[in-house]
Image 1 (tube, rainbow, N blue to C red):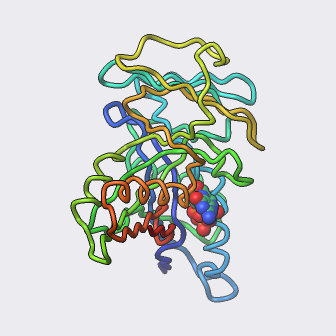
Image 2: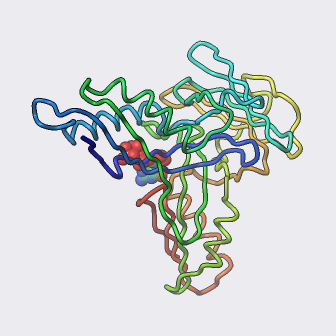
Length: 289
Ligand SMILES: Nc1nc2c(c(=O)[nH]1)N=C([C@H](O)[C@H](O)COP(=O)(O)OP(=O)(O)OP(=O)(O)O)CN2
């Protein structure tokens, strides 16, 4: 007998890619369970399917940085409850992080892909399900978006939950209206500007000498050093400046939509500007000037 649940949850995470650097993603999760019927004539009660699988996904991958730790360009060094990561990019630039262990999900692979993540999740979730559940098929998919979108990575130091992690991200639609008319050109402009971007708050920028680790190699462009203290611990990151944008406020979706709206308004004079900035799937903030 097979049981399916579509849209069980959304994984908002980021991964490191040799060419793209940080890639923020929002994956919708579908599952199929194969098994014998239990005493309730069910493979597993839907409410338990949803709760148990979501709990594991939230703990293992959601709001984390997914690392291809078998890649030659990825060095992961555990330091007790913290982990240092050095990731060399194709252009010989480097991204470095030093964060509490829960900021990362370490994958035994050379790259991160949907297939790698599906296999990883199947392997860790199936043994935690009741014995009558014999098989688990996890399918991850991106939201079907037909208009421009971007992938961003960020961290919200003031968030009490897992959004405080310095490198989690989202694949997000951006809708922009000028005098109530949809502007594909402006949406595309922002999608291009923030494609695979790291968004950092100006107040979180530190100097190289404030980093707790030594900088490995020299980046081609300038570097940005950012760090903050949050409930889960101290988070540090070094990123080439060309792969980041510094924003005046926190990088909540409210601030992002305000930032985009203000920037466009400055060019539009008397015209009304409306911005729908999404954070992942089906949620976001609206700004109007
Ligand atoms: N008003 C706002 N609330 C939250 C923001 C924000 O910008 N404005 N941001 C976040 C985090 O960035 C987080 O990544 C959002 O993830 P979300 O999927 O909402 O978080 P959960 O995992 O708690 O939700 P699930 O339904 O379990 O996926 C948080 N809030």
